Length: 267
Image 1 (cartoon, rainbow, N blue to C red):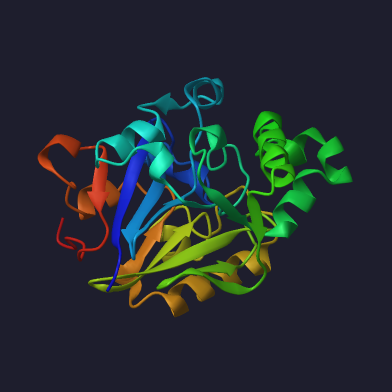
Image 2 (spheres, rainbow, N blue to C red):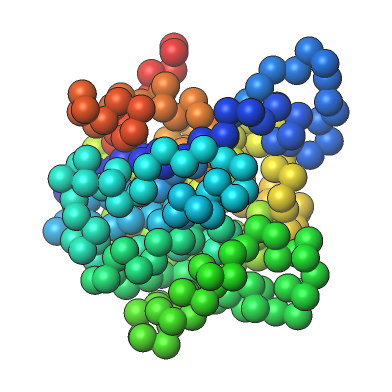
């Protein structure tokens, strides 16, 4: 038995230049754009409906200069899944684009790394630069879930459900974790922001928002070690995902792609 696995695109930023996405890459007048897409991921199997990250709302997305395409919950509905059917949410980290919309999933238990929330409410948040990747309303919503006994914390490697594990790595944020999901094509690593783009791995250049660079590179090593092959790695923001994988159905073109089939490497 295995999971059906999907990527749901909910926002995009088509205006980013390539050099903006990698530390140490200088601006070049001949540089080409490298868009940033924003995703949540859905695993269905073993009688479970598991959402990996929850995206954010339109106001938060637009305030930060991105184009909001649809509520992540509408992406779920395009697959015939209502938000109340989600029983498990994996919070890879608490940055603004991954950790909103918690209230849309009333029946879910939320799984996170404790280091992440400890950082998000630590004294370093007195510094505006340090708190920039976080949204205060999202953090307050997470704490409400905690007080409602709907949060489960994990360190290291933990099996969340049969055939689905989370792996604490840090790097991009202190408590970042990625997910590994067993599918018909093998074990797929949903890297989240352990790598925003394939080129973070291929060029060994971190994304500019990074908490600890040695841990960032160690996280890439962990993702590649867990994934069946490099073709089983799904970066967190790479727009090529929408080209590499087929739409889940004719009416989800540009919205939802299947990750439980091999990518079309030639495209």
